Image (cartoon, rainbow, N blue to C red; front, top):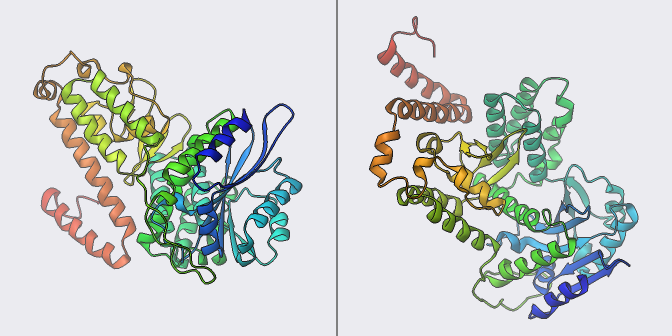
Length: 456
């Protein structure tokens, strides 16, 4: 089965990739090393900084994904930074040494690798140092961010504390100055119980060498960088990390890469100090798995909901399609963030979310729809109240007229405004804080009384 599926990929490639794999006696995929001609060209242009990400499959195998990184890498598509896939026999010194040696045989430019970025759980650092003796191995800013984010969810902190930590982490990662990192370190020391603080390895925030590899990015560049890696790692998890059959997961992932990677897009790799490659061909992008999932969700909305309900939900889903959604698991709920404030989703029917839209209309919001899209699921009838079910309501006015609560509207509006003002005050400088606080103080005195009576 493994031979058949992988050989089909070779036939589909216009320029055959470099592929080396071994199959066990039970016809299971044992090892794999894959690199298309386009991937090899990208690495030849940008070999200085190598980013390594690991994805584990339900079967216990691990996929190593190599990506290029650094100031010179200016590629439009996130997946275009992927330059190599490998599955070692085992994650021991021998298996990884063999994997890195095959990578070096495929890529003569490996000698120009200066820095290798890895995740905090990558233990065989000695193997990396042996195979890449001239390279410095550092923890990546992205993996530290994901590590801390996961720890915040695992610690089951109070929601306001968790929200403050996540907001501060996001802000610091987009502007990783020494001062901001020290502030985040101090915030962790004050918010996390002392017994649990060692689990966070907060000393990483004070290791300036780690952040020098990331600090050159502007705030906007940092935001795009983290979003791009989030998209890439989510694709890896959806195909390889959730498929029980390793061969099928690899085949789906590589086919998706063929359809959506940078060799199907128009961009310039820029000047190469050693070789000048011809411009790449441009061809239209084929529909991928995500487009099929989106179409199924739209169909389920139209089939299950009333016309007005479907219209409202499709408006929310349009935001999901144009956004990056970050998904983290909590103890009982799932945390969804669509480049905005974090909201809590309760996926069990009837699905609910802490956002304004869901609280006011009791309809699947963009956060619930993002969760369905990420898990390749569709809307089910028991996920929404009966009054929104197809055939149970005649018009949007009737539904809103019967369910709308002016008190709820005001309460939600005030809560959202309060949260937004709170976050703005936390992010601004001390000078801006004083100015904005004095403005709020004046408003409070006008509306509700002097300072002696009302404390902000």
